[in-house]
Length: 60
Image (cartoon, rainbow, N blue to C red; front, side):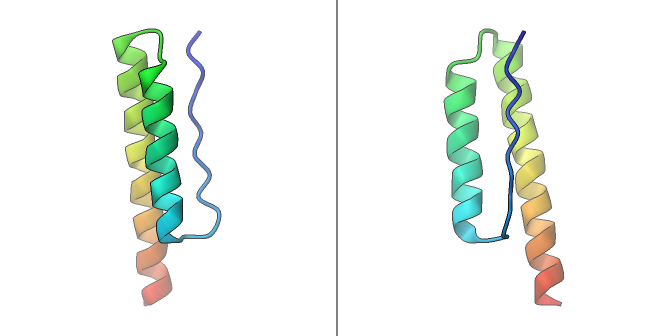
């Protein structure tokens, strides 16, 4: 079974986005299947979207 990548944004800071991307790339590179890698990268994109939404809310 593929290990799931779970990114934790914590405080919405630029370095959080960097950490999300790095962790996703590492996990995808070692995924056992191409579909597993795609799933991991998709999950990271969703986390980045949440991070952007948090940043947007904080600015308003």
